[in-house]
Image (cartoon, rainbow, N blue to C red; front, side):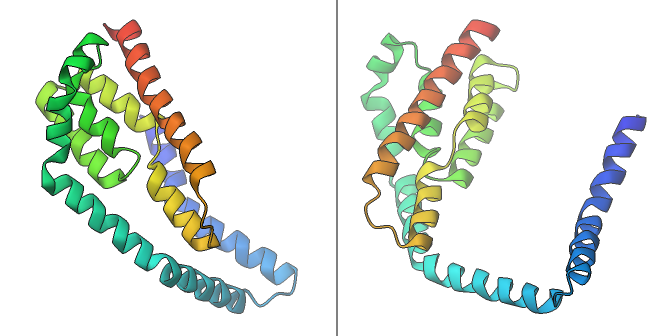
Length: 179
């Protein structure tokens, strides 16, 4: 109980302490901290405006994908292959959407856990996938849009392969440890 109170106390003080340390170092170096803050905020807004159209397109595509029913169709289409390689069909929507959208994959993972249980093998696999993979396409979209990188093929292919590896290893490890 004392550890929890200590962690809570530290977490409450973390942000004010960080601000105090930044201001102290700025004053020690005789820099105008407020002007530096305003310049940083201005650059942050410029970046946000630059990547905003890309994000709108990505979110629109995710909405179309979620609402079209194509994920369910793909799941039904490849279900025989999934069962042959012992890939749980309940995990496929999460595996398909995790590289694209964090919020959509979180909703799917929550639904998987709600339907199958927290301690079920499916729930455990969903949790491990959420922790071991990234919203790859979203992250690449944001960074490449910000840096104005047009040719992303050399970035996307290894990143998607890393996500596939994370998903497969998550399933294997959960089946070895928990099944």
